[in-house]
Amino acid sequence: IQVEKLDNGLLAYTVNGKILYEDDAAFYNTISTPRGGQYQVTLSDGTKVWLNAASSIRFPVLFTGTERRVEVTGEAYFEVARDISKPFKVKAAQSEVEVLGTHFNINAYDDEVSIKTTLLEGKVKITVPGQAAAQPARFLQPGQQSGISKNGEISIVKNADTDEAIAWLKGRFQFENTDLRSMLRQIS
Image (cartoon, rainbow, N blue to C red):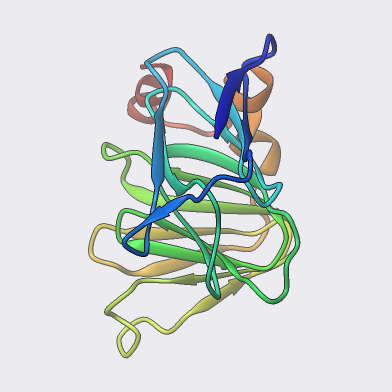
């Protein structure tokens, strides 16, 4: 496996035909960004992930089996490569987002009031594992945002400000009707 950091900050993984498994366990990578830093990663299936400051992603070097699963802390934007036979799942704190091919942002910093998933394109399924009876799965359409509170309640904003949710991708802060504490958390 060759890992190369390109000039634009993109981390490129190249699989050179070697055996990637020992004792049937996949090799996993974890990439963490420092405060004030951002990274872009292309996963083995072609999915592109942008990590915001003080964030991390844990992912297998090569996706095998019936699903593609990653774990995120902090904030990440995904452009998921379409593969109907292998759903893409993102675990972030107490939430799980399942997609087949889409563009979405997930904000799951520990100090945030809720875990927010904002959908820009496609369709995603939001669940709180272990709470299916109390909180059934919810589906987002483009332009919607889910919020999962610390107690596991899912709420949906039908007309979310998608530009505000992904402003960090363009190196900007964008605030509209935002309280001072929220602004300071984002700036930190």
